[in-house]
Length: 237
Image 1 (cartoon, one colour):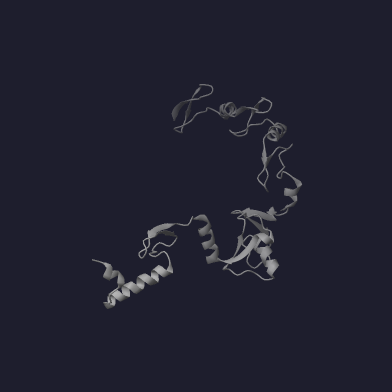
Image 2 (tube, rainbow, N blue to C red):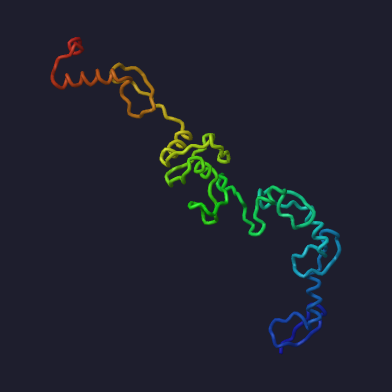
């Protein structure tokens, strides 16, 4: 048996265990009451909390305090204030756009695109959603789009799904279009090998200012290679 001292009543007692803090269950209960004695954040009343993070003395105080805090709408993410704690949507439009039985939304925004819930579509994702802009094009042309076909937004607004703002392109042309629009064209400056004129062009290895200079230079080089005497050679000293 080992000698211990109760941390509440300071009474000395003996126990077989190496670590004992209380001499009885009464002292243990008193110590826990002291630890969990809280002050209500709403009315300031002292109460014995069930947990260490208790904040309210009653459900009424909890409802009053939470009505002061903003609630985030589950549909659009907008913050709003309301009486009570059971409000989940900021308006009737957000409320009726969601299936209340399953919590499924009829339309969602993902990566800037609007997706529509249509589980019967053969190309929908695992949750049953399909891009709205592709669905509008498919209804317009009367067939399902192929994998290599991309719907391009002309004004670059991904949420503007009007039929006049949509254009069908293949993947390669669509990628090249965005690269060309995002990257400014490079301009290279050079001197023509035939006439010596300074020119500028987007091509990197250009040598002549025009096709006539290119043909003229090619003819001169061919005559020199064949050993013919050119008028320009006779004038040289």
